Amino acid sequence: MAAHFGRLRKGATTTAVAAVAVAALSASQAPGVTTDDLGRQAAGAAQPSGDAKTGGAGGGATGDSPYYTDLPPLKSPNPSPSASPTTGTTVSVGEAEAGIPATVLDAYKKAEAELRASKPGCNLPWQLLAAIGKVESGQARGGRVDASGTTYSPILGPKLDGNGFALIADTDHGAYDGDPAYDRAVGPMQFIPSTWAWAGRDGNGDGKKDPNNVYDAALAAGHYLCRFDRDLSVQSQMNAAILNYNNSTEYLNTVLSWLEYYRKGTHEVPDGTGTLPSHSSNSDPGASPSPTTPATPSTPSTPRTPSTPKPGGAGSTSPTPKPPTPSSPAPSPTPPTPTQTVDHLEDANTGKLTATAGSAFGTKVAVRAESKASKGVAKVRVRFTIIGDTDATFTGGESVATVVTGSAGTATAPALVAGEKTGDFTVRATVVGRVLGGLDYTATVTPRQADTLTRTSDTALTCVPGGEFADQVELKATYKGAVAGKVAATATLIKLADDATENDKGPYFKDADGKTIRTLTDLTTDADGVLKLPKLYADDATGTFLLRVNTTGGAVLTVELKVAAAAS
Image (cartoon, rainbow, N blue to C red; front, side, top):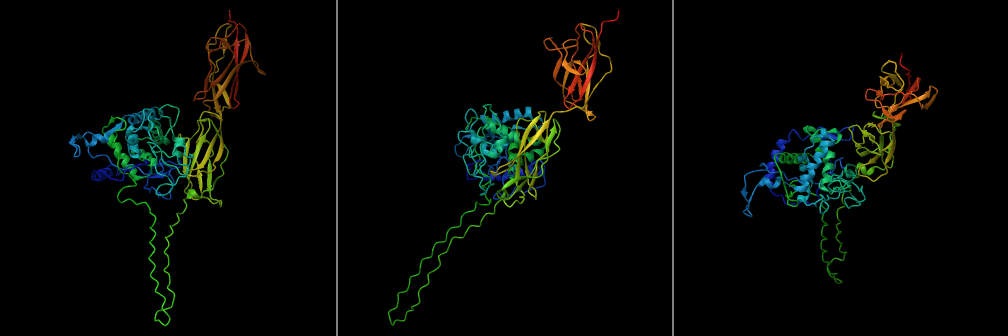
């Protein structure tokens, strides 16, 4: 979240009234969140946002650090003008708030356009990105960005050191946030480095993924909101996406209020002239104050020691006791969070990870978070990441999934689904918020297979010398009795049944240039398992010739082709 927030609450009366309106607006739109087997948050029963001093990042993009809480004016973005009490200039209350810096607005709209093409089912409105950008950073501090969309100075949230915020130890060696000890939320959309590492996008096409660039950050935020095949036109799914960004009902209500406001109308203003909100979630009246160190009591003055009585006098000869020096009260030790107690990850009986292209893996990756005493640690977030040249994903189409360990300390990743790329890839399990060695699992995607090939017709395949065969060869592939779609195949005109060498005479195919070829590679059955070969032609040789078709998985079919002169 944004690092620099004003402490003066500007327009408190307006904000308070607006809060009532937002409460009414979102009374049926602000559920809590629950975590499903994908580690994603979904609308459901109310759930507290967690103790900021003991919780982790909660799986959100931001680390649950502060955010601007100013609400939009109750009036529409185009109210009647009035005179400013300080300058006498005619202004519109809503007009200034409705203005979005030109480059920032362009970034939001370009991100919407990209998501409309890549994830049309998400229905992401750019106004949602604008609402989050307003709450996170005041539209990049009023549009203080250069022509490429990069902020003139980094926008950094506070240290996520567990002191009033989530506890997230450094995960990027300070590369993004400049802090080698703890993570900080970074940039206009306030991503924590560990989230940006996998969620970052290049939105302006400069070959870099920079959280301080509004084009990159807006596109990353759009993809983050659209995860898990969400449809943001469904209110409950939009709520879940916003809560996943920052698990706070107040945050949800504030974002929804700005979303509604921007939907009523907005316009661009020059970069650097946008209005900046004035107060944040950690400066509201009535909020729990930050703990302070008790003052050390002052040492009381030492009473004057009575003079020693002269011999024969009436004074006491007992020594004067010294008053005890008060000590500062020792601060109560903060108990470690579950994440802090994790020493390592252990495999939790994950089986062999193998699947055929296009099918689900029968085994899920499972790990156990353990302490030094090898005891399972519950309530720890484990991130599973797919690494390598593969199009395999977790259920839901994502390459990253975060899961909370159960009472036994075990976290099980969502099911893996193989894509069309074959070969090996890696699934890596790491503890969110700790710099610990992860666990790597090798997963293998094997090609689709067929074990049987049959012709779809029993018509004899005949031709006269120098002519072309009237019928094309059409085959159907199956695997264990089921249709075998998208199976690779090869067709070769061979010399003999026991000699698969390519023939140098007889029937042939033609390539794109009309040249003679007798072997076809890179063939694939269609979704119904059907393979239709190109037309066959005959040279001057007569006799019976053989066409052999092989598929991945071992299916083989030999087809007879007869070339004979036409009967007189």
